[in-house]
Amino acid sequence: MEGSELRLFVSVPIASFRRAYAREYWETYRCPPPATLYGMLLSVVGEGNRLVHRGVEIAVALLSVPRVSVVVRKLWRVKEKRVGLGIGKNARPEFQELLTGVRLSLWVRRGDGEGVSPPLVARLQGAFSEPAGVWRFGGLSLGESAHLVDEIRPWRETDGREGRILVPDDEGGDLVLPIWADHVASMDTKWGRFTIGRAEALPAVPPEAAWIAVEAA
Image (tube, rainbow, N blue to C red; front, top):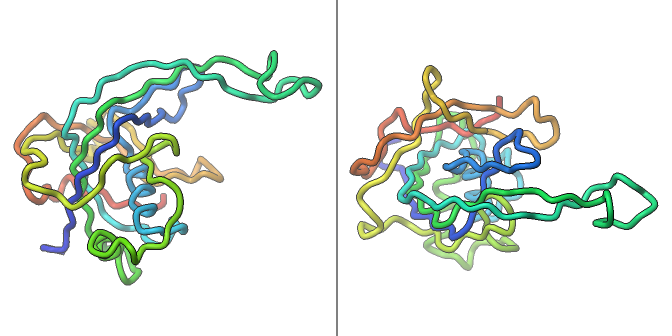
């Protein structure tokens, strides 16, 4: 729907978007998956039911090239019931990649498959114009709950001119990301192939090819 897009600026100091099958070494995607972005947007408006706005369309561009670092975490597990949690074999080290300095241009619009009213884009506009009208709890995160969003707001012209757009590419995309995450039966998670474009001047509205419909498989 022309003219119905909302463009946002998103800044996250530290984040990690764990690759689906990473185990002892938690690699991170260099770009937040569409499913992760959708979850963040639902949290902004205080929506706890992720089915409500399925079918919404988003597009994203990377404004920064985040630095990658590695930290060691202590993972708790249950291997021996006779000893306490985090003791002996009930703990092991895990290595995790972190991204520092994630900045995004994020577009949202009503999709053909989003049959609810008001759509997510309208609820987001209302949340930014009247924050007191939003009922939500907890911090706003992108990915893990500890990775808090520093800033999310409507776009300003001073936020940057260049970026790299994430484009769906079913034929030659070398980046496989979850579009819809099924946390109960992972077999129903919807995946998509993508390409991160080269740095270029960003348009006010991304091309049609860059829009991603966030919907179940």
